[in-house]
Amino acid sequence: MLLIIVIVNYCDCTCATDKRCIFVITAMEWIMPLGIRMLLIAHEPGRSEMATSLDTVETFGTTPFNYELGELCRKGDITALIAKFLPPLYSLVFIVGLLGNVLVVVILIKYRRLRIMTNIYLLNLAISDLLFLFTLPFWIHYVMWSDWVFGHGMCKVISGFYFTGLYGEIFFIILLTIDRYLAIVHAVFALRARTVTFGVITSIVTWGLAVLAALPEFIFQETENVLQGSYCNPVYPEDGAQSWKHFYALRINILVLALPLLVMAICYTGIIKTLLRCPNKKKYKAIRLIFVIMVVFFIFWTPYNLALLLYTFQATLFGYDCKQSKDLDLALLVTQVIAYSHCCVNPVIYAFVGERFRKYLHHFFHRHVLVYLSKYIPFLPSEKLERTSSVSPSTAEPELSIVF
Image (cartoon, rainbow, N blue to C red; front, side, top):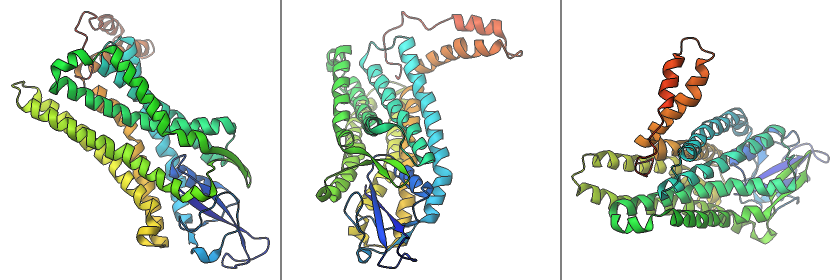
C-alpha cells in the first residue's frame, strides 16, 4: 500500500506551508509490515513528521510535490508510538513463533510421523511460518539503522520470502481443512486418496502457488539510495502505482481471508453434520476444536483485512482527514501485529492439541531437556528422568496423524 512521506527541503524556505518549498516523495509499498516502514520514517534523521494522505500523489521516486493536491498531516505522535512498541512486539512474535514451529518440525522428523498426508501438511505449515519469521530480523535491523545493508539481491529475496511464507501458511491451513473433511465425511474415498505421494504432490503445487502469489514482490523490489541510506522499495511503472496499491489490498483480502474462511465454512459444516450422526463420545471434543480453529482464524485475520481495505480506499470512501488517517494508521498497525501473531498460534491449535503430539513432546522434553538440566540443577531427580526418557513412544503403533 502506498505510503507517501513528504520531506521538506529547507534550503529555499523557512516553513512547510511555503509553496516555494521542494518536497521529496518516497513511495513505499507493502513489502514489509507497515509498522516497520513507519518506524523507518520515525528514525530517519532527514525526514520530517509531515505526510500527505495516501492518494495525494501517485508518483514514484523523487518528484516535486504540488501543495494544493493535499493537506499536510503531522504524524509524529504515531511514529513515536510505533518506534517504542513495535520492535519488541515483533521480536516477541519471532521468538514465540520460532520456538513453537521448530518444535513441530523436530517432533515430526524425529519420531518419523511423515508417512501420512496430514502430518506432511502440518510440517509444511510449520516451514511456512518459519519462512515468514525468518524475514523479521532483517526488517527489524532495517528499522533500527534506517538503512538496507543486505544488498539488492537480498532485498528481492527477503521481500519475496516474507509473502511466500505468509501465503504458504494460509494455503496449508486450507489443505489441512480439506484433509480433515475428506478423512471424516468421505472416509472410504480418503483411504485411497490420502497417500504420502498425493500429500507430497499437493504440497509442491501449494508452494508453487505461494511463490506465484508473491511474484510481484520478487519482480518489482529494488534498492534505492535515498537521503542518508539505502532503501528496499518496490519500483512500479508510474502509471500503475494506484492500481498496484489496490491490487495488493484485494489480493490480501481474497487469498488470506475470504478464500480460507469460505473453505472452512464449507468443510467444517460437513464435518459437524457427520460427527453429530456418529455415536462417538469424542465427537463433541472434535466439534469444540473446529469452533476454536475458526474463531481464532476469524479474530486474528478479519480486523487486519478490514483495516487494510479502509486504509487503502480511505480517500475514496472518506476523503482526506488528518485525524481519521492517523486513526487508520494506528488501527492497521495494531491489527497487523495481531494477524502476524497467528503463526505463533498455529502450532498450538494444529499440533499441541493432539494427544499423540503431546506424548511425543513429553518424551522429547524429558529426554533432551530435563535430563540435560539435571546435570546442573541439583534438585532434579536425574536417575528417574533417565529412566523415563528411555521409554520412547512405540514405533509399532498405528501410523496415525499426531493431531487426531
